[in-house]
Image 1 (tube, one colour):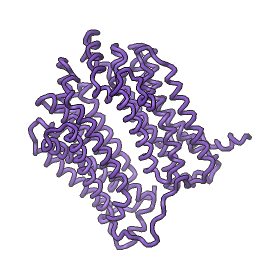
Image 2 (cartoon, rainbow, N blue to C red):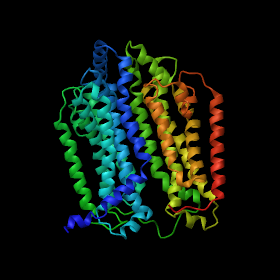
Image 3 (tube, rainbow, N blue to C red):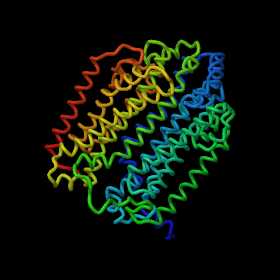
Image 4 (cartoon, rainbow, N blue to C red):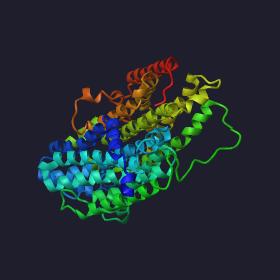
Length: 527
């Protein structure tokens, strides 16, 4: 048997295990990502039913640098071309996020929890776990590509296939990026953070390049993998050779990841964690929680401040986004309120920041679950530290950190827009009851049903999807109200509704109290 075959022994079994473990998460990601693009045909056709309307939209969006930075330039005025412009970039980002989660989950996270060491004691080759993780990511991205291709085939088979391959290929590119980072770091959280930072940099490079160049040929755009996917130009004279750039990057990064995987032991990394001082300086459980989460808080804070600065600069061009199209104006008003397009645009941005901040809050809460399953909580609780006191340190960071990053996003919007500090900050803080409700649900799931704690991610993702694409798909308000964000007043510009704020805050408090109560009465989990 060849050396390569030995190193890949057990790949099939590990791949089946990975697919089984992701049997709920993966289909949801695939359907949401692929459905986002496929469902865009109906919504855009209702908005721009004639070729003249589509041509006018394409011209106005290409001339608007703010919109180019957000979505990219419009390369074609066909219905398929507009779908590729409006949803292609964000579908590629979603595929990338899905892929990095899958790969880190089945590589570094398995090693961090000790499960990989147990599996490796059987007949498992050195590179089999990495191969299984990449194959799982390949299955997911192939599903996304097939769903997009099938959903857009009626607009042109060539363009549909090109867009599907561009989105799926971007997902695989960041899957291999995550595979490299997983070899370099000791922590799954750090691996996800670094890969997410690489994805964020790619988006910023593409946005900066497209903002300054309407043809998509800026050097900055070509430095970004997301820019490569954009320049496939689906439904606009496809550039099939741009897919070769993505394929080449996938192969090169996969080769690097395989080389690194063969040069380290299970559980080890090339960038080991820096050892702490000989004498500890952390005297409380809350201080330890802050030490564990301060990097995450800093990263989210910086990202939200920069995001506010970027989107605040787009406010003045809000009127150019819709022109005279009343249907588009209605969508913005549904997403962001009824009083004035500028206020509606600001409210839309604040709402999007709120839904993304919910991901931070849920992740911060679920850090408790990670501490528990990795058995790092037991030494702390073996001292004179109660379970509620231990959990409270992390929860203060989750709930207080979400307030901090929302304030910073509002500050960024104000600094870039230049007007309305009070209303913008107030609108940002008004999102907190909905954010805290989702965080409270995560506390309940972890405290009462620890094996289902990761479902908190699914609920937060569902709320994000409803807020993002629900208005564009003209979903009824009853469906949008499934998300706690659907009950909040659309600020700035709207009228403050204190009833939902009080109700959601009370629900969040009840969820946290119930979750902590159940925590006190159950055994700690180890997996």
